[in-house]
Amino acid sequence: MIWIVIIMAGLMTFAARYSMIGLFGDRQIPASMKRLLGYIGPAVMAAIIAPEVLTVDGIITIMDNPRIPAFIGAAVVAFLSRNVPLTILTGMLLLWGMEFFFS
Amino acid sequence: MTAPTPSRSEEFLTGIREEAPLLIGIFPFGMVFGVLGLEAGMDPLAVFFMSSIVFGGASQVIFAQMVSAGTSGIIIAGTVGIVNLRHALYSASMVQYLGHLNRGWRILLSYLLTDEAFFISLNRLETRPHGPYQHYHLLGTGLTLWTCWQVATGTGILIGAALPPSLGLGFAIPLTFMALLAPMIRHKPSVVALITAGSLSLLTQNLPWNTSVIIAALAGMIAGALTEDILRKKDGRG
Image 1 (cartoon, rainbow over the protein chains, first blue to last red):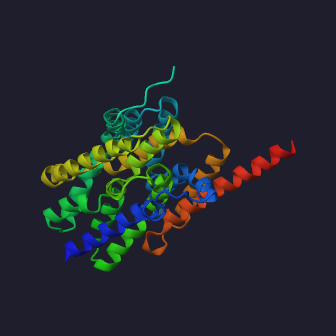
Image 2: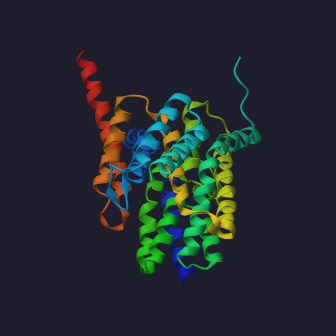
Image 3: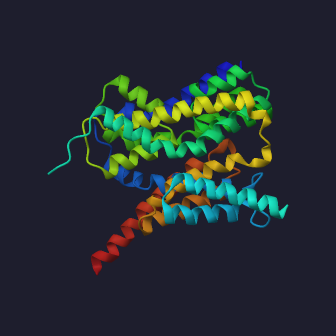
C-alpha cells in the first residue's frame, strides 16, 4: 500500500519536472512566460524560506524564535561572502549558540 | 582569443564542482528525512527507495509527516504533487536549453530537476557562453545531488536515531536557499518578487493541500515582472 502511494507521488513529481520540457520540445516558450520566469529564483526561494524561518508549528512567531536572528546572521554572511558552506555553518552555529545560551 | 568550447567532461565536472558546496546542507537534511520516515512507522526499504522514486526533499518530509498523522494515501500523493508543482516552473525555464535534446536525455534530466541542481545549473546556463554540451552541467549537478541524497537517506535510516532532534538540522535547508538567493537579488524587481512571495507564503500557509508555495511563487514572479514594466515606463518618460 505504502509503495503505491510512493510511486504515485513519484509519478506526479516527475510529471511536474517533465511537463514543459516534454510539452514544448524544441519550440520556444512565449516571451511573456519567459519574462515571468526571470523571477523564479527570488520568488520560489522566498516562498520556501519565509515559513521555515518565521513560523513555529504553523504559527507566525517573532518573539522567542532563535531561527530569526540565526537566519539574519547567515543572510549577512551570504550577501558578503557568497559562500554556501560558510552561510550554512554560520546559521547552524548561531542557532545552536542561541539555544544553548537562552534556553 | 575566445575560450575553447567546454567538452562533455568539462561541463559535467564543473557541474559536480559547483554542486559540491551545497552538500553540507543537503546531507543532514537527507538524514533528517531518513529518521522522520522511520519514526512515521514506514518500512525502512520504503523510506530508502522513496528518495529515488520521488527524489524531492521537502515533499518527502511532508510525506513522512502525513504518514505519521494517519493521512490517507490519495491525499498524501496529491499533496506531494502540489508541493512539487514548482518544478513545472523549472521545467519551463529549461525548455530553451534542453528542448532540442532527444527524449531519453529530456526524461533523465527532468528526473534530476530538483531545486538545488536546477538553480546551480540555471546560473551556468544564464551567465556563461552556450556550448553544445551544456546539458552535461545539469547532469553533473543532478547526479551529485542524487547520490548525496541516497547516501544521506541511508545514513539517516541506519544511524539517524542517534541524532538528537534538538540539533534542528532541518534549518540547513532555508540556509542553503539563502546562500543560493543572495546573488540573485540584483535589482528592484527581484526585491519586489522576493517580498511578495515571502509575505504571501506566510499568509497562505494554512490553505489546504500545501498550495501556498506555488501560489506565493507565481504571485512573486508576476509582481517582479510588473515592477519591471513600471520602472521601464518611468525611465521611458525621463
